[in-house]
Length: 83
Image (cartoon, rainbow, N blue to C red; front, side, top):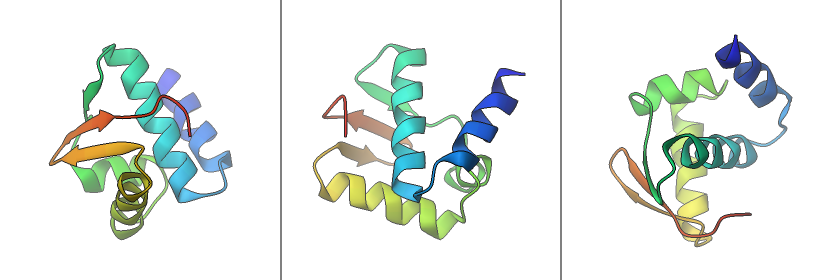
């Protein structure tokens, strides 16, 4: 049920970048770490967020370019706790 609520919340978030950021913040809270592990393959996470894999990758790149995260394959370091 919690996963369904997360999917519904993600669909209601307008921009891909905001969806990805919300997902990463939720992961950080759940994992209680500065460096979080994606909860599946990137294309699976993209589909869970209601995004195309290319859009998901682009949103991650934008967040990294903006200085919010640092990517290392499936590991993401959260550099700023809010957008």
